[in-house]
Image 1 (tube, rainbow over the protein chains, first blue to last red):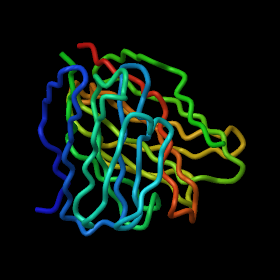
Image 2: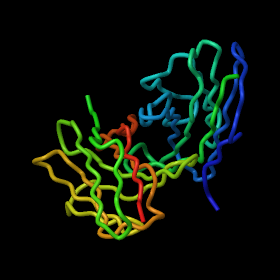
Image 3: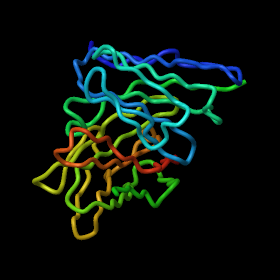
Image 4: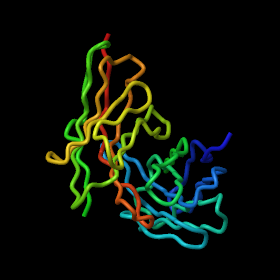
Length: 113
Length: 115
């Protein structure tokens, strides 16, 4: 079955460490997205990519970095510059941008300890 | 700039009662509109979407939504709520024909179902 896989489901990070969240899709989707979800805040866009080797900053990109070396993969790195990284992170993909709606992964919950 | 407002943070409905979740958007033209549902600790699932045409759209799980241009609204409805409908619901808006943009989400409405 086609889908979008996020790993790990739970992740713990010490302060000052970088950590990378994985997102892989086998839907042959062109576009991929990273959102951050905090209670009462809805989903806020971190980064998105429409094609391989190209990506754009979203509303809250500071302290995060991404790469898009393959169509199937869009990893997100949470750097030590992100001051409040504890959150639920959601990856999504779509065909040709927003027109068809997104398919979401099941999320990664990151906790700073 | 686009924006989405979901005025109700939390709604409680009795099982079997009808449901309406409100969504208002701000956009210069008719946007693409979506409703998603999220169970705790999970990703989001698409319930329905509106691009153009018939303003009443049917979705999965017995949900429907009506687009009202004059009110800039896209409210989600269900005639009879089941306990399994308890979840968080998100309205989202996208720019038509703009492949280089991303969806904007509202802050969500949490639905509780009482027996």
